[in-house]
Length: 464
Image 1 (cartoon, rainbow, N blue to C red):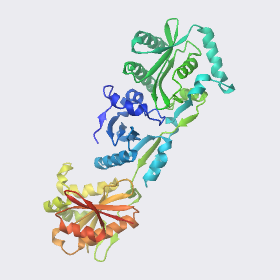
Image 2: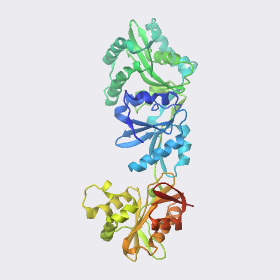
Image 3: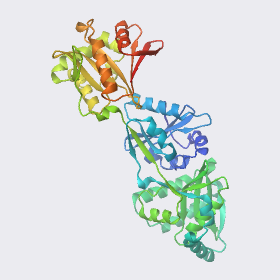
């Protein structure tokens, strides 16, 4: 997958997906990707008929849940996302997952950490509730609106477009003179709101305002995504009491009957925002679930010790350094192993590199490297690596040339595969070998079932 940074120039590619998206959460909108691009650093690709967005937050990649197009296949998109993460050496983190998709991910991933933080939940309202403010529970809003109408009897709702730039610029001047919040978050949000209203000529957004005495006293801007209006901007002059609820009501009335929900976004831990949003009685708080996917290796505290009739498999040790270096630098073995160590070599002393990397990879639970021992001698390695994040991992085994031809590879591989399934708890172990590697093919045939082939490889699998 090739990801392209989201910019105002290419955001049109996202809009067809979001226009039909019914996840209800504000992150599934062009407006949030543009408005908060400096925080989210979003990039996107289209795969399996779906939109896949990768965000980078505090240096960590996090993915939105795939948004399907008309022919989109979410399961296929998730598989591609998982493969991408494995290739990049990162764990899949799927964030802002809508609640209706949570079961899909719980059933998909055997090992997962779930986060569901209260401050990031969206405030979602029924459009008709905000449009009517009916019943005793909304008496406060109606009272504020009545005061506003008495003070500004000629105030009228007007639709806004890019042609209304002079009106909007004056509104921001008036608003800036009254704006009292000094926090960096509030100041940043105000700056971003101004920038967003310059996007009205894109045709993706709906905006309106309350016009009184030839000037705007309140503005609102939203983006229709499925049956939800994502309300990106709500501002009103503090000097016009009641303008805020009046703006909320008028904007809801002018959204159209096809809009069922109004998402007024999260409160970002701002006490005033939370109080205000709760006073409007949300129908629900839209949870943004974060699934941090792990693998069965996370359960290991140390490299276990395995036994076969002639061999022992355990952790690589300092005294294995010379033998392990020789194995890793053997060009013929590397060719059949299918990996060129030079691709990832980081420049540290070569006699330290291979053992250090194996130990670091286990510390990060990216893989587990077993030393294959005959007595105390390290004669090869077995490596369980490349998790598919759904209960499967790949297994490889190589034996030093001076110990080849005695069935040690077959014995070590069978022991590691057995442990992976019944000790570690994997659902499947997979392996592959080059077609010309007859010894490896014989080794894999002994323990596994052949599942296919392509131009270069035979593929094998072992399941419980």
